Length: 258
Image: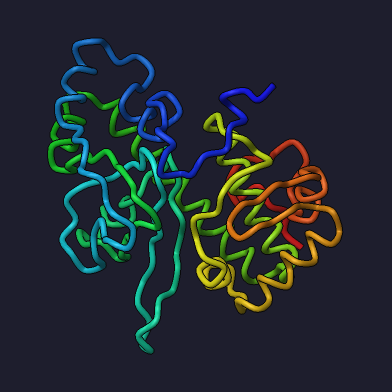
């Protein structure tokens, strides 16, 4: 019998519960009172859905808000000198974006919806004023920023020391773990990002990405039909990714250095 947890639906249909969202660490930090929570909820805004291909913000725009994905998915990228894109990340339900703009006061990357996406918005100036009165909010934000730094460092290691097979395995294992942590199926999901975007993010040619998917399927590791992925051997995928036993999470910093 298929359970709700195992049901596979497009990300645009997946509404993340507040308790499973990264913003939960800001919205409901330990020790916050009901009155304090009400004050925080007053500044959190629900944005109108962002249509596929539309931008949440563009690189170079003044920083105003932090965002959390409620449903759908978003790609962050920076333009290159040749006019193409360098993908810097994919943001799934329950994940934050915009933290990298706090210091420079402008968004260093652009954020584009990969499908119809809804987000929650926290205007940063209002959040900063509130955190003066509620220091626990500021501590939570520092923790989230530290987590993002870890992820960036681990992605650099992934690009510099891993083979094509290991990079794709690590990426798929990361996606699987991120879904599982938020109550979705770890073994069956849709990839809203294109093969080209995946290759761009992993530093691989799109032909290499396609070849690796074909190899994984031939080896019985997974089945892939367009963007629908079914993982048959999660333990083997984890092994190929080079994950550290007992320390793995949804992020690349759990990946073992070669």
